[in-house]
Amino acid sequence: EDQVTQSPEALRLQEGESSSLNCSYTVSGLRGLFWYRQDPGKGPEFLFTLYSAGEEKEKERLKATLTKKESFLHITAPKPEDSATYLCAVQVRAQKLVFGQGTRLTINP
Amino acid sequence: NAGVTQTPKFRVLKTGQSMTLLCAQDMNHEYMYWYRQDPGMGLRLIHYSVGEGTTAKGEVPDGYNVSRLKKQNFLLGLESAAPSQTSVYFCASSYSSGSETDTQYFGPGTRLTVL
Image 1 (cartoon, rainbow over the protein chains, first blue to last red):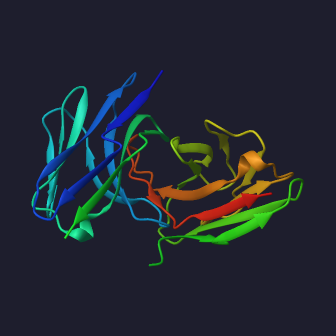
Image 2 (cartoon, each protein chain N blue to C red; image 1 turned 90 degrees about the vertical axis):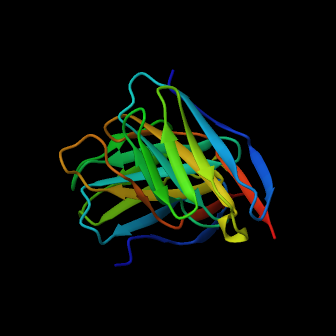
């Protein structure tokens, strides 16, 4: 069974305190791994797509990396506006995404 | 571009009532999807469409029907609402480039409560 697990469920950091979110997956075939950001009461907002082990992508204070079994979302010197729930999803075949349950990130000023 | 829009934003139903959720996209995307999001469950696919006039079942299709009469619209129907269908519903769309990996773009969601 295809499974995506995110950890931790919730993370509270001080402004400027760097950390990483984890997304581990057990799937029959990885066609792509997606990271989304979701603010309360809003829809998921696309951040990154990673296709193969070793790939990295960056956007402002965020950097996503991918290995054969997991992906990390590194947050460097976060600001309060980075507070959100971060979702990881794996595409296992055409039109099928398997989502993790998300990590709720809070950045305190 | 408005992207993906959903109406209504909120709705309260009584058990047994019916309703239709509307999703519209202005990105000329071929593929459209309906998900539900429940606490602790993540996003789960209800139905999807790979083009105008086509629909297919996702992971949790029971109790829902869909239609894609126009390329830009995807409707989700509940014929007889049940309390278990209380959830937040998201529509998404993606562009088919021939690749099997397409980024899905999401709408703002509809919060549905069934009493």
